[in-house]
Image (cartoon, rainbow, N blue to C red; front, side, top):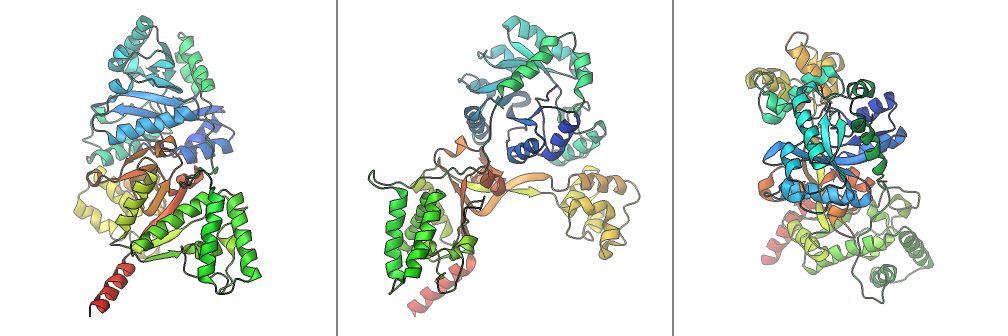
Length: 532
């Protein structure tokens, strides 16, 4: 039986399983397919897809969308294909960014290329959608009465139904872990958390044989699982570049425009253009063209050119300094010919990741150039990239201890002596670090606290903003990824759900527009000198 309602730890502080462990368990159960349906998020899809493909398991990509007014009212959306995937990205973005979002309103739209599953009687009573809609019957004794009502409604409205076993934790004994992270999320203690704020203790990853036996009297509820899985055939393309497009006249190509700008630049940089310089430029431009990066180079050139026209100070650095093309475009300031720098370190045909441009701006001027990028390339085609804030040893220890009701004063006595390390090392700190040899976690509640804290090692906690990463896409960003507000919603900063690593694996092109305080100091110093 294929799990269709599955949460990883990317359902922040509610799900407790890494995507890798989900797939490993699916492989142990010899499953051919497994879905991932984190709540209002598809942040974990790239590692999930990679892990599933490594085990020859078909990944089904989806998302649980809850209603802001009542999280018990939800729909599960599963992507049938790439268009369905883009639709889910747009739905998540709407759920995250729009204060007036409602599932009732969403379901009035034509939701194409999706499977929709819901247990909510309130939603199902008023839904007009019929195609690809399923009533969710939840495999739990605590849902027996609700399931009867759902089944009656399915018969009345002639809607198909399917049984699911929601998965939030790996094994039954991981329920305490779920309670702990839920307490952290809700800023309460495990003892004070209400049943309404945690999931059923039966929502762990079970072997399907027992569930099939329980539901043998409703064979269609089991049969429809396979039918749904068979319809979900999204082939998420990884490491295939989706290049943004630099706007050009009809009679010009990106390659020809790049050649022209490089030709202008090389004449300004060198009094004598040697055969070596010509050959190097031809080689670099050929590789750039063959790999499809001409538009990317033109966009970087455009950003730098605009900054210079505005009198901004910029520094191009990183491996881009190895490129003669970048030097001739004015993106970098180091002559790679003079310093014998190898272009292949920056870009070569064997490289699977895109070239990386790091451009430093004064901290006073960075926001201005970021605004230009959004205005030039379109607010729908540009987004800031997220970074995932995860639990380290001290933060994991502190938060779990608070969930157990320990006072801040007592926690601090221990936490200040914990070294900067991975939370997974917490149970063995005294053996691994001499400075922690006197830390005694052998007695309760500390023994349980450090075990649970070690289990949330590297768990995602929340999203923040990458220091400089910006993604520019050929069409709307939401065709490729979902967006949400950064942690401080009041600032209004919108970021991608996938972090920089997943963005690159999805083939999206990133440019680092970095803030450099020293450039601001240099600018102020120069203006002060001129003023005197």
